[in-house]
Image (cartoon, rainbow, N blue to C red):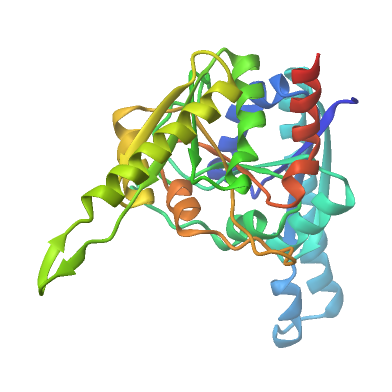
Length: 313
């Protein structure tokens, strides 16, 4: 398979440039070429009729803005090339989130790497609209550095991978890619599943759990995790969590720090747009970078093909 391609959207901030810390890792995945993309936001152009001044002057501002972005990207491309990765630069006009998704589709991008966190003392920052649009709409996987990532990214080394599972075939799409990444990096894998049973009431007394049902569900979940672990390979750890999936998963990650989470975002059958589930959304705000795989398309991504080819060889 020819080298894979990645896209890194940049807006000139240190925040967006945090994605560069993952370049050595994505090179391990077979990424041979990276497109650096900046967007000249045409919201300003849309308002130019309300701005006094000659049309030529207003056009000149836009041209200078795009020229600045081209020069900025050129310098960043030199850094990418210094790591032995081909680099190209692209400046487009439009709404950032939409243009990133459109370019990724047109250029056949295999992976989008986007950083949504800063190091300036902000403890929590909601995923920006651009990142949110990319994760929801792009037809390729996204590697996301979320707003609360605690992992030291320089140098970025993957020692533990966490794969959240819920018993669905969709979630299991993450397994071959996680196993492939583990082989490339020497990382271990933790398969994690949560079991949550709401309390029921008997004779108007609240808080009574159906113990037999809970025990049966726990046993079934353990059997399932053991089966998945046998598929992934020797050394795979499993963890059964009791309670809310998102809360328990984030608590598990605090006690067992991971360097990467690999998971498939839930979608709706027949609908291309990904509907981020509450667990995925919470994990994106967790302490580790997240590789988000697309449902439906996930089985046909170049990353999945590369992982499958590596397993076959």
